[in-house]
Length: 113
Length: 115
Image 1 (cartoon, rainbow over the protein chains, first blue to last red):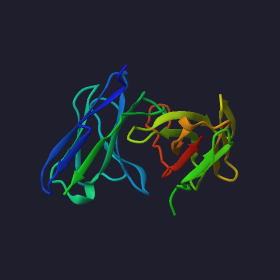
Image 2 (cartoon, chains in turn brown, green; image 1 turned 60 degrees about the vertical axis):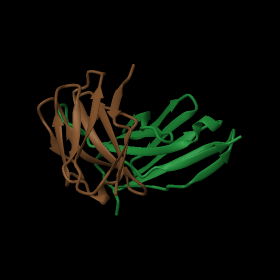
Image 3 (cartoon, helix red, strand yellow; image 1 turned 30 degrees about the vertical axis):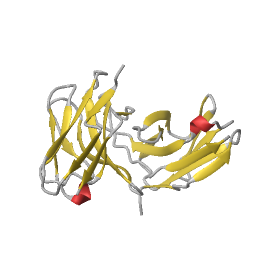
Image 4 (spheres, each protein chain N blue to C red; image 1 turned 45 degrees about the vertical axis):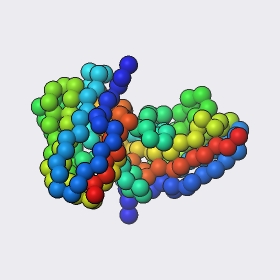
């Protein structure tokens, strides 16, 4: 039972490079999320997709784009990476509807030099 | 002021101790309260999920919510070295039947239980 799978697990980029983080879930969940986790800041929502075909901005969307490819997959793209985007990125999924618990992947550790 | 405040610790206790982890919040709309546990280099995993005020117990874990004082607690009895992790509180407002309920995470408390 894989749950939420994120690829890659680690990545180092140079400033200005682009990259797509991949996320897939096998729990048949409708809703998916992207967070970043920084020391002292907790988890902050970047974008979410309440259901297939919809995406919405979260708390810190600047510098990111997302694509809900299908029900299983939700990708996060950095078009022109900046050192401030160095972080650990987590993807999560949940059942559709109010206040459903979210299930997280194990993260992508991204360093931008 | 952050919507959710959580003492980052670190907190170090001996095996068998009772651990108390706490959060305060400012948003009166919060109705659902979750606790997540995060091991090093892993994603958060849901530990406890409560609605409104009161207590909920699950094995060695008890979640307590006091909405009148906007205070959330997680108690761990008979703590074990395997409980060493970061604990994050995550309250959420009621979102309606077909809406997404945004989680607001505390910054997490680092707990170490030593043998």
